[in-house]
Amino acid sequence: MTSSVLYDSPGPKARVRNRCYTVLGSLALAGLLAFVMYRLGVKGQLDPKVWNIFNNAGVRTMIRDGVLTTLKVFAVAGTLSLLLGLLLAVARVSESRPVRWFATGFIELFRAVPLLITIYALWVLFLSYKGDLGVVGDNSAFWGLVIGLTVYNGCVQAEVFRAGIKAVPRGQVEAAYALGLRKYQVMTALLLPQAVRAMLPTMISQLVVTLKDTSLGYVITYTELLYATRQMAGNIIVNGENPYTAVTIVAGAIYVSMCLALSSLATWIERRGSRTKTGVAVAAAAEPAEQPTVLAATEDGDQAVR
Image 1 (cartoon, one colour):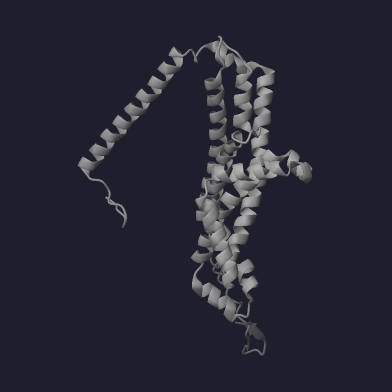
Image 2: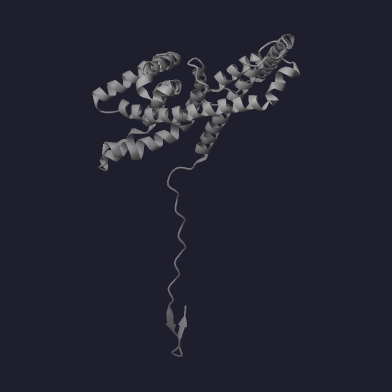
């Protein structure tokens, strides 16, 4: 029986109890699923006509456009949040007190404000200047959603970066300064590469949150996946009702698939990083040098090799 410092291996009674809990939990989950399916059947949501709407080319096109729009927001907001997080993390560990205070206040403020309020406030701000901003005003919902996601997730990513920077052993930093490196050289050549490598799975996990939060664009009428599918369901009548339930289930399944893909990427990177060998490889032993040739004189005066 093996055990670790933080976990004791269960004994016979504990194993039996855990099996019972597993069986009971599985039965409860199966019962809940059966109840949901029963209620859907009673409401007529399992009628083949309801699900046949997804065979329509127009419906598939709208879902595809919604997915592409969601990925567009995610790509822009995810990239900007990483850049903002990096800048805020560097400012948070700066030796300049005003810079450090500003970064700390910015991070704590936008982490405390609900993301929905931030997005809505930015959307209203862009709409109020619609006549003066030109292209930005025409895409007010897009930029309101992108900037809101960037600000909130950038603050969270900043704390992730800072945790990675603080995890670097202090001795390495002191050795770098002893070699004559400047602060920006220590940051760019020593701290940030190790911080990014150590915190990369966590950063990708936060990007999963960013992807899920794109659904908040529904509130500001941005045509991301959720808004597009709900609007589509409002224009379709099946058996005298709008198929909101079926459309929402499909949209939710698409969100889950995209998030699982990103989570799998984070898991793969974490496993790959744990298998990476670090340190200086030991050089192979050198082959023994050839012995020098020794010439010896024989009794006849000739030379022989020994």
